Image 1 (cartoon, helix red, strand yellow):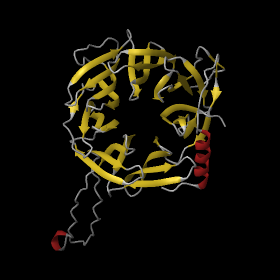
Image 2 (tube, one colour; image 1 turned 180 degrees about the vertical axis):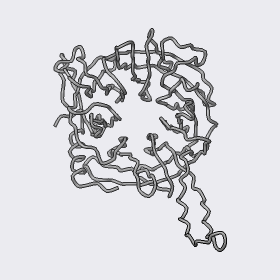
Image 3 (cartoon, helix red, strand yellow; image 1 turned 90 degrees about the vertical axis):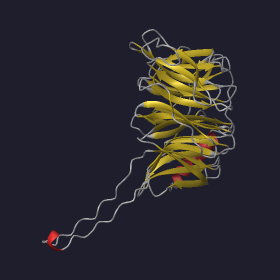
Image 4 (cartoon, helix red, strand yellow; image 1 turned 90 degrees about the horizontal axis):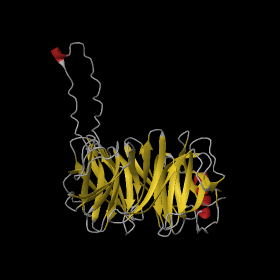
Length: 400
């Protein structure tokens, strides 16, 4: 993929701004304005890997392809990689392992053998009409596919698991013990495990179409923590609200060992985002009231602190160990935050200390919906978000 010099220059500015972010605990929270910069063309998501920010996009050439572009802290392009098997492939999620390798989850289509047409002669074709060439047949994207890419952009391996119907891969988590993959097939959520060498487990169904799994965190022993929402009984735990947020532990073999439901009377709840340290965010809708919740859980799914704010839609969390960050959309005033008075839905990022106390608040003019949020020691907090017209931009907490 080609990128203009202007885009690279913009990214140079971004990463110079975002290096060395730090915060002091203010006595009174006053809204700060972060930086908003255009994202590389077609960027859909990104990960921070050391000094590189790696942007993921799906591109259309002769076939559907996957593109990765790594940009270092100076704004220079470190490497680019296009994944093109000659047939269609689409990426929906990606993650990093502890070695810095990228694991990309998505779909690919099998290569079909198309028979050539036979020219009809003589009495069977008295008018001598030439038949049109048969159009190339495109197969469905019914192969669950995992691509493994090195820290320098080399495609190390492609692992394929054919399925009867087209799966949707929603999240992936990688550790030294293997890969956990969650998605849905025929509207039913599932978990699959895969070894680091590409051996897939059986498909484990997690409820029915009344359950949605949005995030997965793989544990070092091969078990998995799943987060989402459900309107049905799971693991013997019945629905408490209209729809509950759910936290599920599955053993290495895929058996449900623990289910914790987050509920409110008559409310719809969902956990949308999660970190390896069990920091979660999600939505709470009760009547005409819509809120965004952030909660820090232990490995036993016991909450250590929680907070709610007026907000709508998706939310994303990230942590750097000492601080936690929440990106969400709101058009309401937030108690304790001066100068935050949006008139339309707008992006807000809150910074919390280890006890869940707000330390800082950042606004990003023109941005509405968070897409991704990342933290690295080299760059601090950087994210992707969309504006009301769908334009994708990069944002950072550091003001220009």
